[in-house]
Image (cartoon, rainbow, N blue to C red):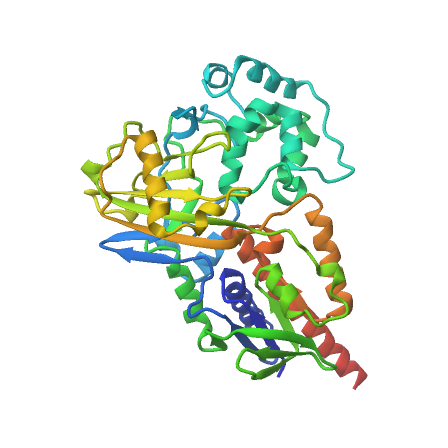
Length: 474
C-alpha cells in the first residue's frame, strides 16, 4: 500500500486528501494510506467561524467568489448546495478626506464602464479623469516580461484613479504593495483583456453583462452556518479512510532512498512514499532545511500580517446614514482601519434582526505594527475611526479581535517564473513531493481548493505511473 503524507490541515490540505481519496475510489486502484498532519488543535486553517448570541462571525475569510467555480463545486459534491447563500448587493464606498464617496456605478475593480458616473464622481479630480481617458488610445503593454500591478494600472489609467480607487480595492484582497505585486500572478485576465481590446475601459465594457432593471446579483457565496461547516463536512468525509492527526508538528522532512521520512516534534518518525506540503512556503523551506538542493526554493518575501475586528451592536446603537455594504480606505487616509464591512447588510443571515455587526480590518504591507497592540488598543483605534467616519459612538455589545500573522502571501514581480522553477526543481530532486496552497496558486478559497485538487491529481498520477512501470519491469 502506497503511503501519502499531507502536511497542513487548512483548506488546501483537506481538499488534497478529499480529492486523493476520490481519485483512488473512482480508479479502482489499490487503496492509499493517507495521513493528514496539522500542528494546531483544529483543522481549517484560516477558516474560523464563531457563534455568539445568534451571531455567525467569520474570523477569517467570510465568502468566496462564485465565478471561480472550484468552491461551489466542492460544496455541491459534499451535498451542501442548499446551504449556499449569496451576498446582498449595495453601494460600496471609498473614504476620501474623512468622507465616504460612492464607488462610481459601473466601475469594476476601479475601471470605469459608464461615462456619466465616472465624470461626476468626486473621488477623482478633473485632471485624473482626463488622464484615465487616455486608456482609450494607449497601445497595449509589452508582454515580454512581468510587471507590477501598480505599473500596469498607472500606465493605463493614471495615478489618481490608482491611488483613490484601484489601490484600496486591491488592498482588500492582498493587503500588499501594488507597486511590487506581480500582474501575471494576480490579475492575468487584465493582460488578456488589454491584448484583445487594447483598452481596459472598452474591454471591461464589452465583457461586462448589461445591467437590466432587475436587482444586481451578488458575486460572492458563503454557507448559512458559516464556512467552518465546510471544514466539518470535509473532515467527516475523510475520517473513515484517512488518518487525521491534529496537534502534531513536523520538524523535518528528509528524502530517503524509497521516499521520505518525517520527524515529528516528539521524536516520532513517519515513513511515506509521497508528500504534499500544504503549508506556507516559509514552513516548507524550514522543513526541508537540511537538503543540499534547497537554493532554488529560497524566498525571503515576508507575507503581510493583518487583523480583523468584529463589533456587535444593538441596531439602534449603530445607525448607518448611508445605504450600502461597507467601505475601503486608501493608503493616503490617516486612519487605522483599511476597510469596514457592514456585515448585517451584506450578509443578513449572520446577525439577529435587532442587532448590527461591523467587521473592520487593520494592517497591510508597510503598516503592520498595529497588529502587535493589545486587543483593547486595537479596538480603541478602530472605534475612533468608526466614530469619525460613521458617527457611531455607542459601546459595542462585544468585540472579537483576530490576528493573522504572516498570513497574506505577496506575489511579487516574477512570482510565476519563480513558481515554475520551484516545481521543476522539486520534480527533479524531490520526486513525489509537491507544494500547494496560498503561497503559490492564489489566496482565495477557490484557489486553495483548486491547488489542493491539482496536488491530489499530481500525486495520484505519479504513483500510478511508477506502479505501472514497476509491474512492467517485474
